[in-house]
Structures are given as structure tokens and as C-alpha cells.
Image (tube, rainbow, N blue to C red; front, side, top):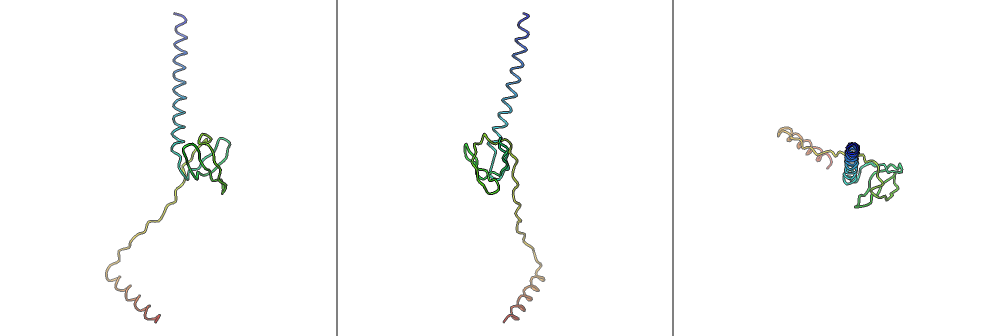
Length: 114
């Protein structure tokens, strides 16, 4: 009976430690699987770069114009890249009177060119 309590305590500690490790491994795997082109990464060797290409087992980093290929497992941290914001075209609604004035101005400028 005296031996049973320490065995149970060691078993409970082992269960929680393995569960924590498994959770960390799963988070890392999810992070590596979620990498996409344009993300900023740091390798385990301390190299900073931007992902240029992501394959099944490898990644290609753009380090200021130099392209290097690494295993996915060599990536330590991933910082989502910044996406360029593109300006969307906006259509301006012009009242008919203003449109007629614009057309008249365009006609006079075309007449001046001739």
C-alpha cells in the first residue's frame, strides 16, 4: 500500500507532462502547415527571411535577394506577412447637368486642338 501512492503520483505526473508535450508538438505542426508565401520566418540557426515558396517538406526563403532552401522543420518562428493593400476603383456618380458641362468643356478643348 505504501508503494502504491508514489507509483500513482508518478503516473499522474507522467500523464500531464506527456499531454503538455503532445499539445506543444501539435501547435508547432499546425504553425508549420499554415505557413504561406510572404510570411516572415526565423530559422533555428537565426536566419531571418521571407517565404518565397512552400513545398511539402521544404521551404524557400528570400533573404534580401538570396534564395535559400530549408527543411520545414528548420523554421523556428513564423510571423504572418503583410499583404499589400490595393486601391479599389471607385465610380463617381455625376449629376446630368455636371456631365453636360464636362462634355461641353471636352468639346471646346478638342476644337481648340484642331
